[in-house]
Amino acid sequence: MSSPEPDREPSWAWDERRWRGGVEKVRAGRSLRPARWKDGARVCVALSFDSDHESSTLRDGSVSPGRLSQGQYGARAAVPRILALLRRHGIRASFFVPAVVALLHPDEQRRVIDEGHELGMHGWIHEMTSQLTAPVERDLMRRAHETLAKIAGRPPVGVRVPSWDFSPTTLGLIRELGLLYDSSLMADDEPYELLEDGAPTGIVELPVEWIKDDAPYLGMNRASTIRPYTAPSAVLEIFRAEFDGAVAESGLFLLTMHPHIIGHRSRIAVLEQLVEHMRGVDGVWFATHEEVARYCLAHAEGQPTPSATAR
Ligand SMILES: [Zn+2]
Image (tube, rainbow, N blue to C red; front, side, top):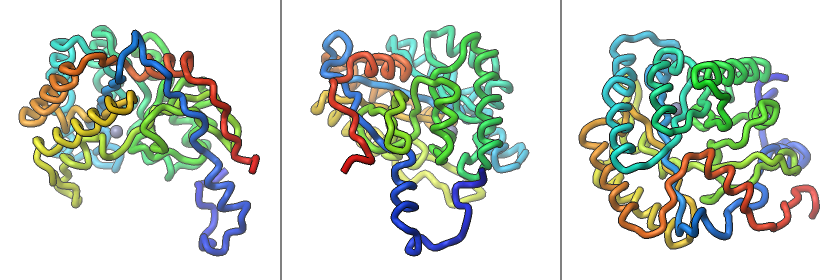
């Protein structure tokens, strides 16, 4: 197996088998939105923090102390602030952690777990999955799984692929590892079952979106064109509208944040205001991704899995 683009043949020359096969490799199957959320809740909220810390610098092959310090801020200043906020509001969340970050900050991961949160996989060193050969992707995923299991004392059950860069071989590896869910794809607002080559896999997808992510609005990298372009108050407005929409549809509100981005004083205030807004609504179920995935699998309405090959 080689990288996902084995030749340079232009797409307009592909035969139907090739373009259809590419589309159907990994696809959204039946909806797993339950008829009712736990205890009759109106809406489900799943907050996630991707603790990238130093790995977004290391991933690029850089050991720049300047850039690494931006990541260390995530561990040193931001995670304690986030954990305090979650504790204050009695909310449990999911933390997706690259294995190298878990090895750099094992005490942080144990603290996250001790406070009732979930630890999920987020690659080895925040590698770009689609640039890897299949054997390298498998090796990194297995090592990441083992590393988190050792530090957490329990194997992780879910993965968020770094940068949501899901490759055509990622789903096969998720199945090999026997994971419960992925949270890297974007085909719906609500949980769904993943299909591989048209066949149901039993793997739950908890979908993400760049709209519901702090990084596109607030990220900063001096060496690239990534700049904050939205005021924290405007980010709050967008996140709140997404949550209000989820309430109106009795759906899922899943939010991705990064400690080194959301953990700053002017921004953690936005998260605090968002949480206060959500807690002001009756019937909100705050849950970890693992809890949401298990609940959805157990309570999904029984519509048949759409078959990609039957038409
Ligand atoms: Zn990340």
